[in-house]
Length: 413
Figure 1 (cartoon, one colour):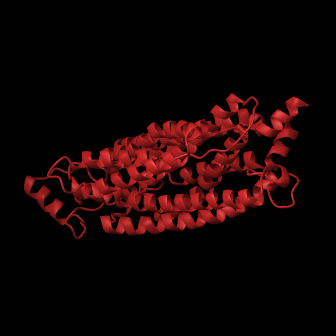
Figure 2 (figure 1 turned 135 degrees about the horizontal axis):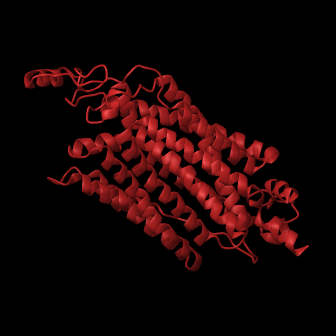
Figure 3 (figure 1 turned 120 degrees about the vertical axis):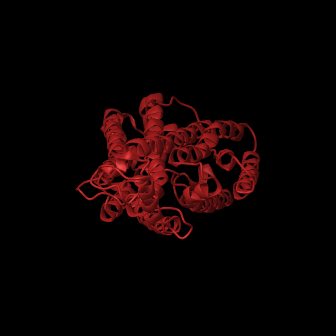
């Protein structure tokens, strides 16, 4: 079985369908080959533009939500972000089944149309006189519904290792769950820990995520070389270990407390004050140009006793997560596609997308609830526990994550 794993990990994901190769004359003509790669590059561009749009929204969604509806809190932010993935989770299997039996252009055109309408709604959620946060919730859900898209590959017969397929879905769920909660909490975390204004948080966090994106490109290029030497499974395992280290470093240490929005709260206690003193304290608390107070909200009790997460900790954690997440993400996709083999993958890919969407639903909800109630120490400690369990699961099924073509070929022999 170890031999099968090594052989499968050296097998190109898209096959060696280049001019002059053994399979070239049998599988497709040169015209078909060029057409296929033209379509793939268009998909690359589509995914790039989609990711750019998503990054812009995810960084500004918390300040935007606070601006359009003052009743919205960090807990509701989790539901708003999760609504995107809920829509995607519902739509992905439908579009996957649709793409298997109808021309692939149909679900693609429909999903793009829904996305355009939903983004227009999102742009104008500030117009209604009330309940704006619920309009945003609906808009993000529709954007997610329109974001569901799948592709399809031609081909054969054979039995799929369902245990390996289900396990890969679970691994993919955990990978997306981790990154979803990280990108959700980044803006509230930096505003609480460093007393950044809304404008500063959008700018600085945007720079952080942009740097993370550049780092991911470098990681992707390195993965292409490393996967030929150590294999996809080893890279997936290594990526999870690095992610775990990233969240461990993010745990609060030391004795310095974050700046609290109510300045008169010191030494982990609430002093006896008169109403007039309370008003003066709130008046003097740090604020941004719009008048909103900055710092860790006094409503979050943990702000009074949880140490601050130093900026150096955050940046180190970002670097590690920026290495681990891309490795885990691309290796999950690669292993999953190899497990399925050359049969039509629309429905299976739809379920994988649904798995990722479920992670993007639960991740923001989990982090917003736990962070608001118990603080970053509990939130990130539990994440470390999740990742350790995932590493254990990967170790148990490690030998079963073998490419369909290799496993099927071995059975035939």
